[in-house]
Length: 462
Image (cartoon, rainbow, N blue to C red; front, side, top):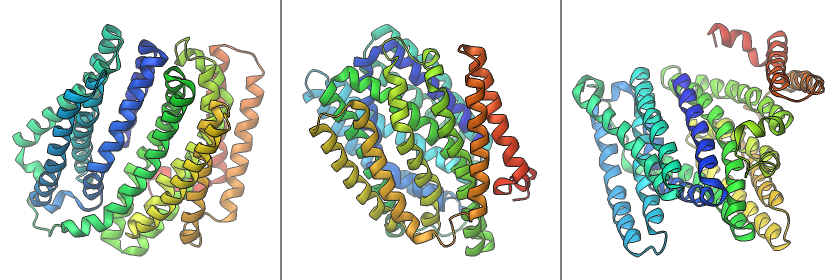
Protein backbone atom coordinates (compact mmCIF):
# COMPACT_ATOMS: atom_id res chain seq x y z
CA UNK A 1 0.00 0.00 0.00
CA UNK A 2 2.77 2.52 0.70
CA UNK A 3 4.16 1.83 -2.79
CA UNK A 4 0.77 2.52 -4.40
CA UNK A 5 0.41 5.68 -2.35
CA UNK A 6 3.87 6.90 -3.32
CA UNK A 7 3.21 6.39 -7.02
CA UNK A 8 -0.10 8.21 -6.67
CA UNK A 9 1.52 11.07 -4.77
CA UNK A 10 4.24 11.39 -7.42
CA UNK A 11 1.58 11.75 -10.10
CA UNK A 12 -0.35 14.34 -8.09
CA UNK A 13 2.93 16.13 -7.40
CA UNK A 14 3.71 16.35 -11.12
CA UNK A 15 0.15 17.41 -11.95
CA UNK A 16 0.41 20.34 -9.54
CA UNK A 17 3.52 21.60 -11.32
CA UNK A 18 1.88 21.18 -14.74
CA UNK A 19 -1.25 23.04 -13.63
CA UNK A 20 0.86 25.92 -12.28
CA UNK A 21 2.81 26.08 -15.55
CA UNK A 22 -0.40 26.22 -17.62
CA UNK A 23 -2.35 28.64 -15.41
CA UNK A 24 0.42 31.11 -14.56
CA UNK A 25 1.08 32.72 -11.16
CA UNK A 26 -2.06 34.85 -10.81
CA UNK A 27 -4.67 32.26 -11.78
CA UNK A 28 -2.75 29.54 -9.95
CA UNK A 29 -2.98 31.76 -6.88
CA UNK A 30 -6.79 31.56 -7.07
CA UNK A 31 -6.63 27.81 -7.69
CA UNK A 32 -4.27 27.22 -4.76
CA UNK A 33 -6.31 29.32 -2.34
CA UNK A 34 -9.55 27.58 -3.35
CA UNK A 35 -7.95 24.15 -3.00
CA UNK A 36 -6.50 25.07 0.41
CA UNK A 37 -9.93 26.31 1.51
CA UNK A 38 -11.55 23.04 0.38
CA UNK A 39 -9.00 21.08 2.44
CA UNK A 40 -9.92 23.21 5.46
CA UNK A 41 -13.62 22.49 4.96
CA UNK A 42 -12.98 18.80 4.36
CA UNK A 43 -10.94 18.55 7.55
CA UNK A 44 -13.64 20.29 9.58
CA UNK A 45 -16.49 18.15 8.21
CA UNK A 46 -15.01 14.73 7.47
CA UNK A 47 -11.55 14.22 8.99
CA UNK A 48 -13.02 12.66 12.11
CA UNK A 49 -14.52 9.89 9.97
CA UNK A 50 -11.19 9.13 8.32
CA UNK A 51 -9.53 8.98 11.74
CA UNK A 52 -12.25 6.66 13.03
CA UNK A 53 -11.77 4.32 10.08
CA UNK A 54 -7.99 4.33 10.49
CA UNK A 55 -8.07 3.61 14.23
CA UNK A 56 -11.13 1.35 14.71
CA UNK A 57 -12.11 -0.22 11.37
CA UNK A 58 -10.62 -3.55 10.32
CA UNK A 59 -11.42 -6.46 8.02
CA UNK A 60 -13.04 -8.57 10.72
CA UNK A 61 -15.28 -5.85 12.11
CA UNK A 62 -18.17 -6.59 9.79
CA UNK A 63 -20.33 -4.20 7.77
CA UNK A 64 -22.10 -2.43 10.65
CA UNK A 65 -19.31 0.03 11.44
CA UNK A 66 -18.81 0.78 7.75
CA UNK A 67 -22.52 1.56 7.35
CA UNK A 68 -22.37 3.81 10.42
CA UNK A 69 -19.44 5.75 8.99
CA UNK A 70 -21.31 6.31 5.73
CA UNK A 71 -24.44 7.46 7.58
CA UNK A 72 -22.40 9.94 9.59
CA UNK A 73 -20.85 11.19 6.35
CA UNK A 74 -24.25 11.98 4.79
CA UNK A 75 -25.38 14.84 7.06
CA UNK A 76 -22.36 17.17 6.71
CA UNK A 77 -22.27 16.33 3.00
CA UNK A 78 -25.87 17.51 2.62
CA UNK A 79 -25.14 20.74 4.51
CA UNK A 80 -22.11 21.46 2.34
CA UNK A 81 -24.15 20.75 -0.79
CA UNK A 82 -26.61 23.46 0.28
CA UNK A 83 -23.72 25.87 0.98
CA UNK A 84 -22.34 25.20 -2.49
CA UNK A 85 -25.72 26.02 -4.02
CA UNK A 86 -25.96 29.31 -2.13
CA UNK A 87 -22.40 30.29 -3.09
CA UNK A 88 -23.13 29.47 -6.72
CA UNK A 89 -26.12 31.79 -6.66
CA UNK A 90 -24.79 34.61 -4.46
CA UNK A 91 -21.00 34.37 -4.59
CA UNK A 92 -20.27 37.26 -6.92
CA UNK A 93 -17.83 37.38 -9.81
CA UNK A 94 -16.04 34.12 -8.96
CA UNK A 95 -19.05 32.34 -7.56
CA UNK A 96 -18.31 29.14 -9.48
CA UNK A 97 -14.90 28.85 -7.83
CA UNK A 98 -16.43 29.55 -4.42
CA UNK A 99 -19.14 26.92 -4.98
CA UNK A 100 -16.52 24.35 -5.93
CA UNK A 101 -14.81 24.69 -2.53
CA UNK A 102 -17.49 22.80 -0.52
CA UNK A 103 -18.18 20.43 -3.42
CA UNK A 104 -14.52 19.49 -3.59
CA UNK A 105 -14.54 18.98 0.18
CA UNK A 106 -17.43 16.49 -0.12
CA UNK A 107 -15.80 14.51 -2.91
CA UNK A 108 -12.34 14.43 -1.34
CA UNK A 109 -13.79 13.61 2.09
CA UNK A 110 -15.60 10.56 0.74
CA UNK A 111 -12.51 9.44 -1.18
CA UNK A 112 -10.30 9.73 1.91
CA UNK A 113 -12.83 7.81 4.01
CA UNK A 114 -13.00 4.95 1.51
CA UNK A 115 -9.23 4.87 1.16
CA UNK A 116 -8.84 4.70 4.95
CA UNK A 117 -11.24 1.74 5.08
CA UNK A 118 -9.27 -0.11 2.43
CA UNK A 119 -6.00 0.47 4.27
CA UNK A 120 -7.49 -0.66 7.58
CA UNK A 121 -8.74 -3.83 5.86
CA UNK A 122 -5.28 -4.31 4.27
CA UNK A 123 -7.02 -4.49 0.87
CA UNK A 124 -3.90 -3.64 -1.11
CA UNK A 125 -5.23 -4.50 -4.56
CA UNK A 126 -8.46 -2.51 -4.19
CA UNK A 127 -6.54 0.45 -2.77
CA UNK A 128 -4.08 0.39 -5.66
CA UNK A 129 -6.95 0.17 -8.17
CA UNK A 130 -8.68 3.14 -6.59
CA UNK A 131 -5.55 5.26 -6.79
CA UNK A 132 -4.88 4.18 -10.36
CA UNK A 133 -8.38 5.21 -11.48
CA UNK A 134 -8.20 8.55 -9.72
CA UNK A 135 -4.79 9.39 -11.11
CA UNK A 136 -5.62 8.18 -14.59
CA UNK A 137 -8.65 10.45 -14.75
CA UNK A 138 -6.69 13.37 -13.29
CA UNK A 139 -3.86 12.95 -15.79
CA UNK A 140 -6.34 13.52 -18.59
CA UNK A 141 -8.71 16.04 -17.03
CA UNK A 142 -6.48 18.52 -15.18
CA UNK A 143 -3.99 19.48 -17.91
CA UNK A 144 -6.79 19.61 -20.48
CA UNK A 145 -8.93 21.89 -18.32
CA UNK A 146 -6.02 24.18 -17.44
CA UNK A 147 -4.80 24.44 -21.04
CA UNK A 148 -8.28 24.86 -22.52
CA UNK A 149 -9.64 27.45 -20.09
CA UNK A 150 -6.67 29.03 -18.31
CA UNK A 151 -9.03 29.43 -15.36
CA UNK A 152 -8.99 28.07 -11.83
CA UNK A 153 -12.69 27.17 -11.91
CA UNK A 154 -12.58 24.57 -14.68
CA UNK A 155 -9.30 23.15 -13.38
CA UNK A 156 -10.67 22.61 -9.87
CA UNK A 157 -13.82 21.14 -11.39
CA UNK A 158 -11.71 18.68 -13.38
CA UNK A 159 -9.88 17.73 -10.19
CA UNK A 160 -13.22 16.98 -8.51
CA UNK A 161 -14.41 14.97 -11.48
CA UNK A 162 -11.36 12.70 -11.42
CA UNK A 163 -12.04 11.84 -7.78
CA UNK A 164 -15.75 11.22 -8.49
CA UNK A 165 -14.88 8.77 -11.29
CA UNK A 166 -12.58 6.78 -9.01
CA UNK A 167 -15.09 6.72 -6.13
CA UNK A 168 -17.90 5.56 -8.42
CA UNK A 169 -15.78 2.72 -9.77
CA UNK A 170 -14.78 1.67 -6.26
CA UNK A 171 -18.37 1.63 -5.02
CA UNK A 172 -19.43 -0.47 -7.99
CA UNK A 173 -16.61 -2.93 -7.31
CA UNK A 174 -17.45 -3.24 -3.59
CA UNK A 175 -21.14 -3.81 -4.27
CA UNK A 176 -20.25 -6.43 -6.88
CA UNK A 177 -18.09 -8.24 -4.28
CA UNK A 178 -20.09 -8.27 -1.00
CA UNK A 179 -17.47 -10.46 0.67
CA UNK A 180 -15.19 -7.44 0.76
CA UNK A 181 -17.47 -5.95 3.41
CA UNK A 182 -16.62 -8.66 5.94
CA UNK A 183 -18.95 -10.65 8.15
CA UNK A 184 -17.58 -10.12 11.65
CA UNK A 185 -19.63 -9.26 14.69
CA UNK A 186 -17.18 -7.08 16.58
CA UNK A 187 -18.83 -4.30 18.56
CA UNK A 188 -18.51 -0.90 16.89
CA UNK A 189 -17.30 2.08 18.91
CA UNK A 190 -19.99 4.56 19.85
CA UNK A 191 -20.32 8.01 18.30
CA UNK A 192 -19.40 9.65 21.61
CA UNK A 193 -16.24 7.53 21.86
CA UNK A 194 -15.24 8.46 18.32
CA UNK A 195 -15.88 12.12 19.08
CA UNK A 196 -13.68 12.02 22.18
CA UNK A 197 -10.90 10.35 20.20
CA UNK A 198 -11.04 12.34 16.98
CA UNK A 199 -12.19 15.85 17.92
CA UNK A 200 -8.83 16.94 19.37
CA UNK A 201 -7.02 15.52 16.33
CA UNK A 202 -9.36 17.32 13.92
CA UNK A 203 -9.01 20.59 15.82
CA UNK A 204 -5.24 20.08 15.81
CA UNK A 205 -5.13 19.60 12.04
CA UNK A 206 -7.41 22.60 11.54
CA UNK A 207 -5.05 24.80 13.56
CA UNK A 208 -2.14 23.92 11.30
CA UNK A 209 -4.17 24.16 8.09
CA UNK A 210 -5.58 27.54 9.11
CA UNK A 211 -2.06 28.81 9.64
CA UNK A 212 -0.96 27.66 6.18
CA UNK A 213 -4.08 29.23 4.66
CA UNK A 214 -3.50 32.52 6.49
CA UNK A 215 0.07 32.61 5.21
CA UNK A 216 -1.14 32.22 1.61
CA UNK A 217 -3.83 34.84 2.15
CA UNK A 218 -1.35 37.18 3.84
CA UNK A 219 1.04 36.98 0.89
CA UNK A 220 -1.88 37.61 -1.50
CA UNK A 221 -2.86 40.66 0.55
CA UNK A 222 0.68 42.01 0.76
CA UNK A 223 2.01 41.12 -2.69
CA UNK A 224 -0.98 40.34 -4.91
CA UNK A 225 -2.29 37.13 -6.43
CA UNK A 226 0.80 36.56 -8.57
CA UNK A 227 3.01 36.55 -5.45
CA UNK A 228 0.49 34.28 -3.74
CA UNK A 229 0.67 31.91 -6.70
CA UNK A 230 4.47 31.81 -6.59
CA UNK A 231 4.56 31.27 -2.83
CA UNK A 232 1.74 28.72 -2.95
CA UNK A 233 3.51 26.64 -5.57
CA UNK A 234 6.69 26.55 -3.45
CA UNK A 235 4.77 25.84 -0.25
CA UNK A 236 2.73 23.11 -1.96
CA UNK A 237 5.93 21.62 -3.36
CA UNK A 238 7.58 21.39 0.06
CA UNK A 239 4.42 20.29 1.88
CA UNK A 240 3.68 17.56 -0.66
CA UNK A 241 7.25 16.36 -0.63
CA UNK A 242 7.46 15.97 3.14
CA UNK A 243 3.86 14.97 3.85
CA UNK A 244 3.92 12.40 1.05
CA UNK A 245 7.01 10.80 2.54
CA UNK A 246 5.53 11.06 6.03
CA UNK A 247 2.13 9.68 5.01
CA UNK A 248 3.69 6.72 3.20
CA UNK A 249 5.71 6.06 6.35
CA UNK A 250 2.60 6.43 8.51
CA UNK A 251 0.48 4.16 6.32
CA UNK A 252 2.85 1.30 6.98
CA UNK A 253 4.19 1.84 10.47
CA UNK A 254 1.29 3.38 12.41
CA UNK A 255 -1.11 0.67 11.22
CA UNK A 256 1.44 -1.90 12.38
CA UNK A 257 1.62 -0.18 15.78
CA UNK A 258 -2.17 -0.35 16.07
CA UNK A 259 -2.08 -4.04 15.17
CA UNK A 260 0.78 -4.72 17.61
CA UNK A 261 -1.19 -3.07 20.41
CA UNK A 262 -4.36 -4.98 19.53
CA UNK A 263 -2.65 -8.36 19.28
CA UNK A 264 0.33 -8.13 21.68
CA UNK A 265 -0.54 -5.42 24.16
CA UNK A 266 0.22 -1.79 24.95
CA UNK A 267 3.96 -2.31 25.48
CA UNK A 268 4.37 -3.74 21.97
CA UNK A 269 2.50 -0.83 20.42
CA UNK A 270 4.60 1.68 22.34
CA UNK A 271 7.82 -0.07 21.31
CA UNK A 272 6.78 0.16 17.67
CA UNK A 273 6.00 3.89 17.99
CA UNK A 274 9.39 4.51 19.63
CA UNK A 275 11.23 2.77 16.80
CA UNK A 276 9.12 4.60 14.24
CA UNK A 277 10.10 8.02 15.54
CA UNK A 278 13.78 7.41 14.98
CA UNK A 279 13.19 5.97 11.53
CA UNK A 280 11.08 8.96 10.55
CA UNK A 281 13.97 11.25 11.48
CA UNK A 282 16.19 9.09 9.27
CA UNK A 283 13.85 9.88 6.38
CA UNK A 284 13.04 13.57 6.95
CA UNK A 285 16.48 14.92 7.87
CA UNK A 286 18.31 13.92 4.66
CA UNK A 287 15.39 15.14 2.57
CA UNK A 288 15.62 18.60 4.13
CA UNK A 289 19.38 18.88 3.78
CA UNK A 290 19.48 17.41 0.29
CA UNK A 291 16.78 19.76 -0.96
CA UNK A 292 18.80 22.77 0.19
CA UNK A 293 21.71 21.60 -1.96
CA UNK A 294 19.77 20.92 -5.17
CA UNK A 295 16.66 23.12 -5.34
CA UNK A 296 18.25 25.92 -7.35
CA UNK A 297 19.54 23.33 -9.84
CA UNK A 298 16.21 21.57 -10.35
CA UNK A 299 14.11 24.75 -10.49
CA UNK A 300 14.41 25.21 -14.31
CA UNK A 301 13.15 21.66 -14.86
CA UNK A 302 10.19 21.97 -12.47
CA UNK A 303 8.46 25.31 -12.95
CA UNK A 304 7.53 27.71 -15.72
CA UNK A 305 9.52 30.87 -16.48
CA UNK A 306 7.12 33.08 -14.52
CA UNK A 307 7.86 31.14 -11.31
CA UNK A 308 11.64 30.86 -11.58
CA UNK A 309 13.88 32.70 -9.16
CA UNK A 310 11.17 33.20 -6.57
CA UNK A 311 10.43 29.46 -6.43
CA UNK A 312 13.83 28.34 -5.12
CA UNK A 313 13.89 31.14 -2.54
CA UNK A 314 10.43 30.30 -1.26
CA UNK A 315 11.31 26.59 -1.06
CA UNK A 316 14.43 27.27 1.00
CA UNK A 317 12.41 29.53 3.30
CA UNK A 318 9.74 26.89 3.87
CA UNK A 319 11.89 23.77 4.35
CA UNK A 320 12.90 24.12 8.05
CA UNK A 321 9.36 24.73 9.28
CA UNK A 322 7.69 22.17 7.02
CA UNK A 323 10.26 19.48 7.88
CA UNK A 324 9.51 20.12 11.57
CA UNK A 325 5.79 19.91 10.75
CA UNK A 326 6.33 16.46 9.18
CA UNK A 327 8.18 15.24 12.28
CA UNK A 328 5.32 16.49 14.47
CA UNK A 329 2.58 14.96 12.32
CA UNK A 330 4.14 11.56 11.67
CA UNK A 331 6.54 11.12 14.58
CA UNK A 332 4.99 12.80 17.62
CA UNK A 333 1.25 12.64 16.93
CA UNK A 334 1.11 8.83 16.57
CA UNK A 335 2.50 8.39 20.09
CA UNK A 336 -0.45 10.30 21.51
CA UNK A 337 -2.98 8.79 19.10
CA UNK A 338 -2.03 5.24 20.09
CA UNK A 339 -2.47 6.13 23.77
CA UNK A 340 -5.69 8.01 22.90
CA UNK A 341 -4.35 11.12 24.65
CA UNK A 342 -5.23 13.36 21.74
CA UNK A 343 -6.07 16.35 23.91
CA UNK A 344 -2.35 17.06 24.15
CA UNK A 345 -2.23 17.46 20.37
CA UNK A 346 -4.86 20.19 20.54
CA UNK A 347 -2.97 22.09 23.24
CA UNK A 348 0.22 22.02 21.17
CA UNK A 349 -1.60 23.02 17.98
CA UNK A 350 -3.38 25.90 19.74
CA UNK A 351 -0.06 27.25 20.94
CA UNK A 352 1.45 26.71 17.48
CA UNK A 353 -1.42 28.41 15.68
CA UNK A 354 -1.43 31.36 18.05
CA UNK A 355 2.35 31.83 17.90
CA UNK A 356 2.41 31.41 14.14
CA UNK A 357 -0.45 33.85 13.59
CA UNK A 358 1.24 36.41 15.82
CA UNK A 359 4.50 35.98 13.91
CA UNK A 360 2.59 36.34 10.63
CA UNK A 361 0.96 39.55 11.81
CA UNK A 362 4.29 41.02 12.89
CA UNK A 363 6.02 40.19 9.61
CA UNK A 364 3.14 41.68 7.60
CA UNK A 365 3.04 44.80 9.78
CA UNK A 366 6.77 45.37 9.37
CA UNK A 367 6.47 44.87 5.60
CA UNK A 368 9.04 42.08 5.71
CA UNK A 369 9.94 40.29 2.46
CA UNK A 370 7.45 37.67 1.35
CA UNK A 371 10.00 34.93 2.03
CA UNK A 372 10.01 35.97 5.70
CA UNK A 373 6.19 35.91 5.66
CA UNK A 374 6.41 32.30 4.51
CA UNK A 375 9.30 31.15 6.72
CA UNK A 376 8.98 32.83 10.11
CA UNK A 377 5.36 31.94 11.06
CA UNK A 378 5.77 28.27 10.14
CA UNK A 379 9.06 27.85 11.98
CA UNK A 380 7.83 29.65 15.11
CA UNK A 381 4.62 27.61 15.18
CA UNK A 382 6.25 24.23 14.66
CA UNK A 383 9.04 24.86 17.17
CA UNK A 384 6.44 25.63 19.83
CA UNK A 385 4.33 22.58 19.02
CA UNK A 386 7.33 20.23 18.97
CA UNK A 387 8.59 21.50 22.33
CA UNK A 388 5.22 20.92 24.01
CA UNK A 389 4.68 17.47 22.52
CA UNK A 390 8.18 16.25 23.34
CA UNK A 391 7.68 17.11 27.01
CA UNK A 392 5.21 14.27 27.44
CA UNK A 393 7.05 11.48 25.61
CA UNK A 394 10.74 12.32 25.65
CA UNK A 395 11.53 9.71 28.32
CA UNK A 396 10.49 6.80 26.12
CA UNK A 397 10.00 7.98 22.52
CA UNK A 398 13.08 10.11 21.85
CA UNK A 399 16.07 8.15 20.46
CA UNK A 400 19.12 7.75 22.65
CA UNK A 401 22.32 9.75 22.16
CA UNK A 402 23.98 7.01 20.06
CA UNK A 403 21.24 7.34 17.46
CA UNK A 404 21.76 11.10 17.14
CA UNK A 405 25.50 10.65 16.76
CA UNK A 406 25.07 8.09 13.99
CA UNK A 407 22.46 10.23 12.25
CA UNK A 408 24.79 13.23 12.42
CA UNK A 409 27.63 11.25 10.87
CA UNK A 410 25.41 9.99 8.02
CA UNK A 411 24.12 13.50 7.30
CA UNK A 412 27.62 15.00 7.41
CA UNK A 413 28.94 12.46 4.90
CA UNK A 414 25.95 13.07 2.64
CA UNK A 415 26.46 16.85 2.83
CA UNK A 416 30.15 16.49 2.04
CA UNK A 417 29.33 14.32 -0.96
CA UNK A 418 26.76 16.80 -2.27
CA UNK A 419 29.15 19.70 -1.78
CA UNK A 420 31.99 18.01 -3.62
CA UNK A 421 29.93 16.79 -6.57
CA UNK A 422 28.20 20.17 -6.82
CA UNK A 423 31.55 21.79 -7.60
CA UNK A 424 31.81 19.81 -10.85
CA UNK A 425 29.59 22.30 -12.67
CA UNK A 426 26.00 22.77 -13.76
CA UNK A 427 23.59 20.83 -15.93
CA UNK A 428 21.49 17.71 -15.72
CA UNK A 429 24.46 15.30 -15.57
CA UNK A 430 25.90 16.96 -12.46
CA UNK A 431 22.45 17.15 -10.87
CA UNK A 432 21.89 13.44 -11.46
CA UNK A 433 25.34 12.70 -10.03
CA UNK A 434 24.60 14.78 -6.93
CA UNK A 435 21.31 13.01 -6.32
CA UNK A 436 22.63 9.49 -6.79
CA UNK A 437 25.90 9.92 -4.87
CA UNK A 438 24.25 11.88 -2.07
CA UNK A 439 21.59 9.22 -1.58
CA UNK A 440 24.09 6.38 -1.92
CA UNK A 441 26.49 7.89 0.62
CA UNK A 442 23.72 8.41 3.16
CA UNK A 443 22.25 4.93 2.72
CA UNK A 444 25.67 3.26 2.85
CA UNK A 445 26.63 5.10 6.04
CA UNK A 446 23.26 4.28 7.63
CA UNK A 447 23.80 0.61 6.78
CA UNK A 448 27.37 0.52 8.08
CA UNK A 449 26.37 2.23 11.34
CA UNK A 450 23.12 0.20 11.57
CA UNK A 451 21.25 3.46 12.06
CA UNK A 452 17.81 2.82 13.53
CA UNK A 453 18.46 -0.94 13.29
CA UNK A 454 18.05 -0.60 9.56
CA UNK A 455 19.56 -4.01 8.84
CA UNK A 456 16.86 -5.80 10.82
CA UNK A 457 14.21 -3.58 9.26
CA UNK A 458 15.30 -4.44 5.72
CA UNK A 459 15.35 -8.13 6.61
CA UNK A 460 11.73 -7.75 7.72
CA UNK A 461 12.41 -8.85 11.27
CA UNK A 462 11.47 -5.52 12.95
